[in-house]
Each structure stands twice: as structure tokens, then as C-alpha cells.
Amino acid sequence: MPGAGKKSPIESAVTKYAAAGIFLISGIKLRTAEARAALKQRKAVVWGVASTLFLTCFLGVFINSRIPLPVPEFSLGLGVFLCMPCTINCGGALAVQSGGDFAMALLLTVLCSTLGVFTVPLLMERLLDFGVGVTLPVGEMIKKLFFMVLIPLALGKAMASSSQAAQATATKFDKPLTYLSSSLIILVPWIEVSRSAARGVFDAVSMGDMGALTALYGFIHITFFAANWAGSKVLGLSSETSKAVVFVASGKALPLALTVMSLLPAGVGDKGLLAVPAIWGWSMQILMDSPTAAAWRRRTHSILAGLPRDQDLDGQRG
Image 1 (cartoon, rainbow, N blue to C red):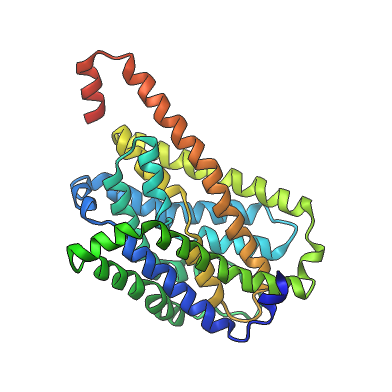
Image 2: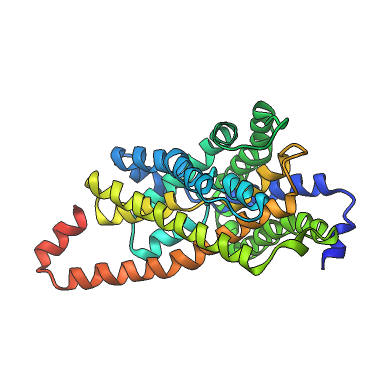
């Protein structure tokens, strides 16, 4: 229904309040009590934060710049997406699904989601080419992201932690909150994409263009996965901790990417087209990581099943 999106007279207000709503809900749903247990694993924390906020961003943008996509906005939009920190909800869920360390996944999520507000604009200015005459207002972006992302996130967490009754209410309405958050996530790109569709911007986008985007992001995501796994092995992290680091550090956040795109200055290209790689890449992450997490859990169980009990316990500790 592109027409409805096209008729929205308050696009900037909708985008701002939708983004705030997304992160308010994320704060309400965020469970941080378990994360404290992971603070003792300093190597894993430093590696996870460094990879999430810097290594994967530099590596992803490097690959993206070497393999230009047929649609210029796809390349830029993918570059913006690759500068993002981890997802707020998916990393912990995938860690649990794979049999990984949930506390570590939570800790990395909290740290990277908070620090990402400050690192993302700086990375984008350093790594991305927005075109001739386009200057990225880094300071202004950080200020806006602070109020649109960090304040709602902290407020939501404070609301949920204010009392046992508040925590119980948040738990009781977990699914409705998830549905509402998903609706808000859909709303922001829907407005941009529908406006672009109404102008005929997507008429020139072919299946081949989408295929090229799919292949490129698939390769980048596999590279992230391999780099994070290799780094975890070199550092001697346990299997459970490695799983948490790999899934958290290999994923990129869609809500923050869409929020950042809404703040980009005029002249960077059509924002509807810019949003496509972020939406597509986020969807691919889910499709690729969910079966990988399940397979990794089965593989770990099959290995442990063949070990004597004392070795089984030692392996889980180490």
C-alpha cells in the first residue's frame, strides 16, 4: 500500500517517535541482571565489544567497497548498516538456541547498544563516501541519537526495573510488546519505501540487483561469523562463551540503522532505496543464524555425548 505511506504529512515526527518507541520497548524487555555474571570474563568482553563496534564494521565496509552493487544507494545503505552495533534482542536468543552463554550475550548487547550511539556516526564519517558536497553532521547525529535511542532505552529499563510489579507486567505482556515493536520497526521504512515507490524509484531495480545484494551480504555475514569464531578460538574462550560472542558480534541492528538513515542529510540518495539493504540484511541474518544456532547446539551435544562424564564436565567449564 504505497499510497498510504505517500500521504503521511508528518514523516519526520513519525520517524522520531517510532524510533523512540522501539527503543523504549527494547529497554522494557532488556534483562540485565544475568549480564553481571559475565563481567569476570574480561577477554571475552573486550573481544566481543571490539569486534561488534569496530572489527566487523571495518571488515564489512572494506568488502562492500571492493564489490560495488549495481544500485549505488544499495552500496551506501549496506555500508550504513555495516557500521551498526549488534541487535538488541536476536543475539541473546541465538546464544540460548545454540547452547551458548546467555549472560555474556546480554552483557555484550547492553555495552554495544549503548556505546554504538557514539561510535556509529564517527565510523560512518570515517568509512563511508556520501558523495561530493555532502557533510555528515556527526555532533548533531550523536545528540539526536542520544535522545532518540539512549534515553528511551534507559527509560524503558528504569520503568521495568522500578518494582517487582513492573517486572511482572513486562513479562506478562512480552509478546504484545514484541508485536508493537515489530510494527514500529516496519512503520519507519514503510513510509520511506512507499514514498520512493510512488515516485517510481524502484522501477529500475531488478531481480538481478536483489540477487547481487543477497550474495554480497551473505558473503559478508559468513566472513563475520568466521572472524568472530576464529578470534574466540585464538583467545581460548569456552564453547559457550564463543557462541555468545559469535552470534552477538556477527549481527547488525536494523532499528538503529533505520533511525540513522532518517537523520542523514539531503543529497545522500533516495532513503527508500537506502533502507532496502538494511531490511534485507537483517532478514538474512535471521534466516542464516537460526539454523546455524540449532546445528551448532546439536553438534556440541553429539560431541559431549561421546565423552566420558569427567571430560564432559571439564569441556563445559573450559
